[in-house]
Amino acid sequence: MDARVVGIPEVDGTEQVAVVIDVMRAFTTAAWAFHRGADKIVLAADQDEALRIKASHPGWLALKDGAPASGFDLVNSPGRIRETDLAGRTVIQKTTAGTVGALAVVEAELALCASFVVAGATARALAQAGTDRVTFVATGEGGRAAEDLACAAYLDRLLAGDVPDAGPFLHRARTSPAADDLRGGRRRGAHPADAELCLDVDRFDFAMRVGLEDGTAVLRPLRPRPDPASAADRAR
Image (tube, rainbow, N blue to C red; front, side):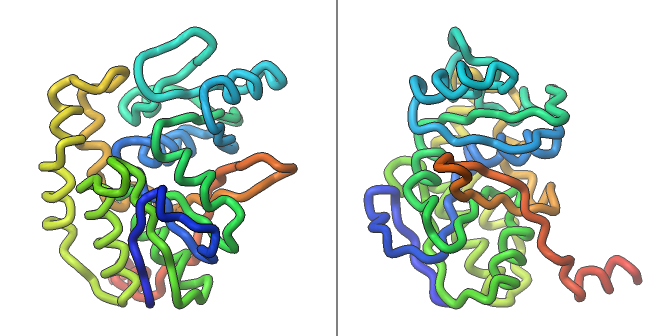
């Protein structure tokens, strides 16, 4: 498969198939939200839009990165989301990088949002879509975030049909500045477990697809067919 990696500024609207990566923490948090029962995640461009959407839908929950803020119910932390019952709820997510990247490619033919926790399912979804070209959008640090680039490299290996050892890719992410900030308590709203939760590779069996629904960007879980080889291995 032909793959390229770009930062958000390099997205030019020609992307037919895109994978937007935010390991620490937007799309790890989103995956945990689905695991905790969220029905869908509406992506907002900024805090004002998130609050406007919530005002029109009082039952929805607004989530942002950084410290807790008035009008927001949740923070962008997988460690905190895993302790929250979201059964049947709609979450409005706004983050500094991840949601911005997703909105940049929302009109692509196929746009997935990814992190290590959904890497295997993301690769299966891409393979089953039959695409031969994919753009990885690394969202952190203007496209230079080590953890996002590591995840993109891991996905690239999976798409090539390899069965790579995740260890070196996770090591690159674990030793990234973002991981160090999380462990050091320098990210507001963080949970002590956030860094390791972001490195829990293939924790979930679903990918996450973003698309427009009535003009609004909506993220939903996408469950690809199980890989036959993996199913056979589990049966032995």
